[in-house]
Image (cartoon, rainbow, N blue to C red):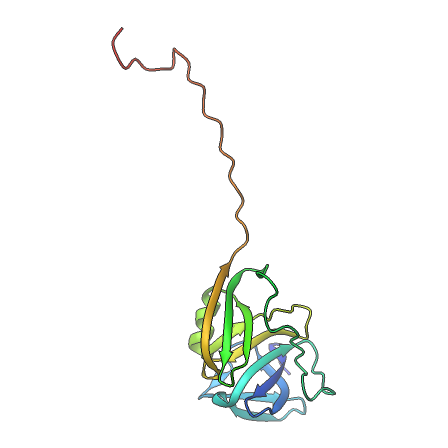
Length: 172
């Protein structure tokens, strides 16, 4: 296994789960992904069948229902991290919120991988990052753009004007 390969759980709309390894980006080839399974075999999956690809800490093979363990599907309040706060509605009417980095990687993933990379609302969950294919979405709503508060600049006091520094506006 190459060091660029990360643990993933692939969930399809049919409810089928697949565990394996994928790189962090650039994994889409001819509308399919080539997943290296935990047994070492490479299988091909069509991107239109995939609901999410969860980059996980552990595979949780003993949990066939929810190995991703995303936890919360929405933020309880405004997110604290920087990024685009998104609300995704899937084709099967499931709803998920997440944060997407708003940088050049955001546009690269839209163009190269034809989907979005998100950070899920629960940072302590098993899922560290999610990839959602464009074909899996019914709608996408931007809830906000979250940035760190900027540091306030304190205004410097104005220089004192004295009689000799004051220019003569009118003749004396």
